[in-house]
Image (cartoon, rainbow, N blue to C red; front, side, top):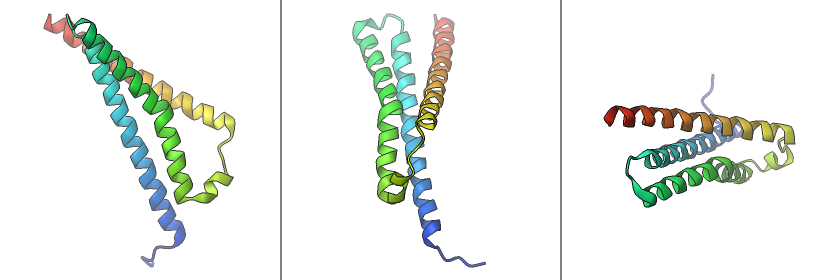
Length: 123
């Protein structure tokens, strides 16, 4: 068994690094959304706090649904120019967006429920 890295192995490592980066951005966005929900649920937080919470939730949604997918595709095209010749089928693209959107929504609902339970216990 040889430890030489051929072009396929380098491409695999590069694409894996891109995917790890995209997942890190998505985790960060979900965390921003969770903080936004927390700000929305703060008792006697005032309008400014609620506006900041709503803004964080909106930014998180935009990052997960728009920024990460486009950034990933752009970086992937730089690493693997042939990937432009193999675009996703429209059905696959919408299925992936629906899956990411559903995961994001379920995560935010879980955080909202946890915050609601925590605030109810603190009052």
